[in-house]
Length: 201
Image 1 (tube, helix red, strand yellow):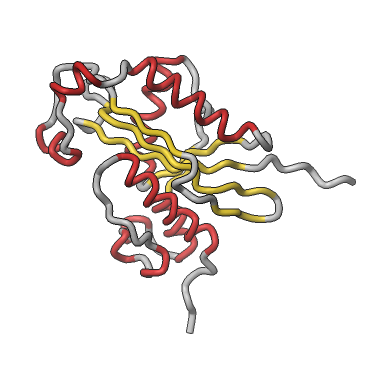
Image 2 (cartoon, rainbow, N blue to C red):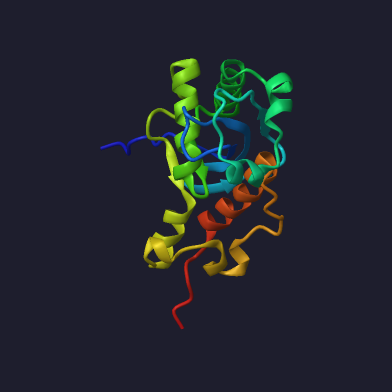
């Protein structure tokens, strides 16, 4: 029996800055993405995370915001109201970018985030609300915290970047600029994918 062909996965590190905890009442203000690498039946190949990137700042979709959440990104809602991209245009451009990034080898895009739960919630909601579809499907996301917990044999709630071995972490600063953080997390993801696991000596 011939071996089943495995379609490669194209991992896209995504970071979202938003002004509240959930989409709809609150707004995605910026979106950054970087190609982290490709995995096929032979293994994982890391990409240069600065080579293929995407960044947009978006117009807010409501008047509501949480001041503490807004302060994290340092973005100006009034400026974004006039200069930010409309969410429909931004999400169509993002979906086109994702599809183009995976076109060469027929790769299937997978979003990866740290933690994916927050960024995926905004990303998927915005994609469906403003474009009607997602290049990642409805479940094409991978959480880096879960990946590390499983490989390290740790309970998920015990995991934070501060608990990870230093060699796994990017040397870049976490700035809360969506593109900076997407690139930083792409490096973390590549390190996790090639990590042999914790030393058991």
